[in-house]
Image 1 (cartoon, rainbow over the protein chains, first blue to last red):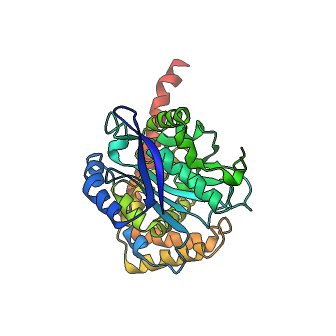
Image 2 (image 1 turned 90 degrees about the vertical axis):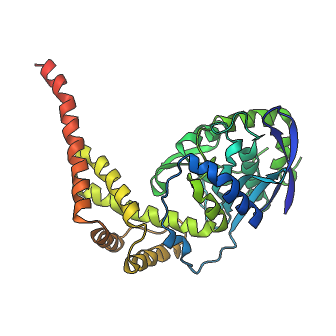
Amino acid sequence: MQRRVLLARGHDNQRVETLLVDLAQKHLDDFEADWRPLLEQAGAEDKFWDWVVKKRISLSSDNFESYAIEYQGMTQGLMAIETQWHRSQIDRQNQVVYVQAIASAPWNRKAIQQPPTLRGVGTALLLFARQRSMELGYEGRIGLHALPGAESFYDDQNMADYGPDPDQENLTYFEYGRFQR
Amino acid sequence: MAQDDFNFMDLLEDDDWFEAAARREESVDCEALAGYGWGTHLGAVMVNPQGHSHFVQLRSLVMQAWKQLVAEWDLGIGAEAASAKGQELIMERLHRPDPEIQETLLALLEAKLSKPQGEWEMTEAVHSQIRDVFGKVLSQEDWKVIAASARDHIYSHVLKQEPVAVESL
């Protein structure tokens, strides 16, 4: 899979073509070599139980998809989605694409680099999640949990806000319902 | 245009739409637009999203049981402090637990995953098993720290009321 995605350079707002592709080893290498040192400076905490992650639980994993955006040979954004298990909070008969993670490269975040190298990376990945929902027959429905600092982004886009989810450490659950023109 | 023909990615070609969306994104003040702040583990999440989804679900299950336990103690205004301190300690203690603890928790997780989303419940039997885990992984010193966090919160709360009470005499 390879799709042309139009974004903008941060320093002059010139529109530029990037590529949205399936996740590959190159993106993971970029993460380790280029993203990680910047994230370590930001002081990310170690809060994982690796023994759970390593354990193979006998369930199909066809329902997880991972994508990356590339520009000038560098990985600019990453997204992981789940496509089978999650149900709509609006009507539980309807399936949603669940967005497990969307992150831009550190140099595309205003808090880390001003101006950012690229603008709109996260927006493009979120749009692609909705597009996948259309392709899967879910009519554009997607759900996600957001950190407190990201809530305004979804509120401004009229996503339904279901408030803090006690099952997900009180992250706020948002959902786009059926797409209607 | 029919809905089936609509492509969300085409919105990026509209300069005005893009500018508004990019500004909204730039107003976000955290490391991830969606999902947890995975930090330096994001690469591992991308390689194994299913495994990390399992981690999130197991952590949720354990924390739900912990909150239920704290609620049963009826600590009033000290409950939140005890809950937060306990969560912090449990996260640490379950970082590398004994194999026996791992097996217990993974069995509970598999039971949860075997049910359709939304149909799993924290039964008394499940809660009891997780309480046993807390009893094994938290040391006596940990329990004292949790109790002290509730005590200290109540203590400072009462002292904050003192000037108000004196003024109203």
